[in-house]
Amino acid sequence: MNKFTILKGVVAPMDRENVDTDAIIPKQFLKSIRKTGFGPNLFDEWRYLDKGEPGEDVSKRKPNPDFVLNQPRYAGASILLARKNFGCGSSREHAPWAIEQYGFRALIAPSYADIFFNNCFKNGILPIVLPDAQVAQLFDEVAAFPGYELTIDLERQLIVKAQGDELPFDVQAFRKFCLINGLDDIGLTLRHKDKIAAFETERLARKPWLAHTM
Image (cartoon, rainbow, N blue to C red; front, side, top):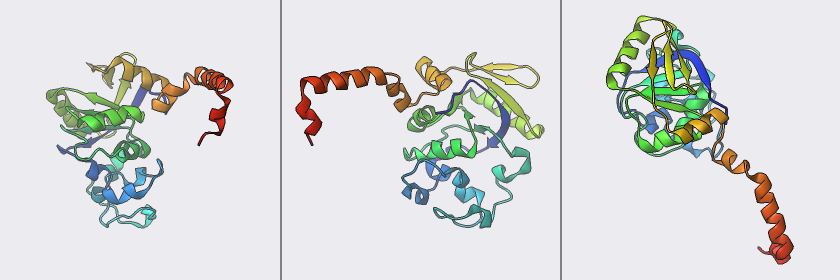
C-alpha cells in the first residue's frame, strides 16, 4: 500500500447524495478476482453512454461529455469532493479499488457508509469527514475556480486551501499510523515476520510430523 503523508491535488466534485457502491463500480465488474484494472470503470454507468463489460477496451466506448470526470478542468484530479452518505449500498471492496486506481487518494464528504469508510483506509485512501457547511463551501469554490487545488497534510490533520486557510479534520490514530507508513492488514502482519518465522522453526523442531500433515 502506498504511503500517504502530504497530498496536493486538483479537486473533482461529485455533487450527489447517497452515491452507492454499484454506481462507483457496477456489479458486472465484480467478476474479476484480481485487485487491479478497475480504474477505467469507476462510475462506469455515469461516465459512458454505452454499457461496459469487463475486459472491454474503454478507448472505443462513448464517454458522457456531461459527466464531471470527463470534463477537462478535472483531469488528473486526486481529491474527490462528495455529499453525504457516500459509498452506501453493498460492501464490495472493489469500490475503493476503483477509486484508488483511477487516481483519487483522498475523499472529502460530510459522511460515508461505515463499511466503505473502513475499506478506504485498508486500501490507502483517506476519507475525510467535514461538516456540511464546510463541504458546501468547498463545492462553491471548486465550481468558481477551474483547477481548484487543496493540500492535505495527514500528519498535521489539516486541509490547506491555496490562499492559506486551514480546515482541521479528525482521523483515528491507528488508521493515521497505517496510512502514513503504507501498511495494510498484510503489511501489519509482515512487520512481525521474523517472530513468525522463529515460531514456526521452533514449533517444527518440537513437532516435526506437522511438516507432513495435510
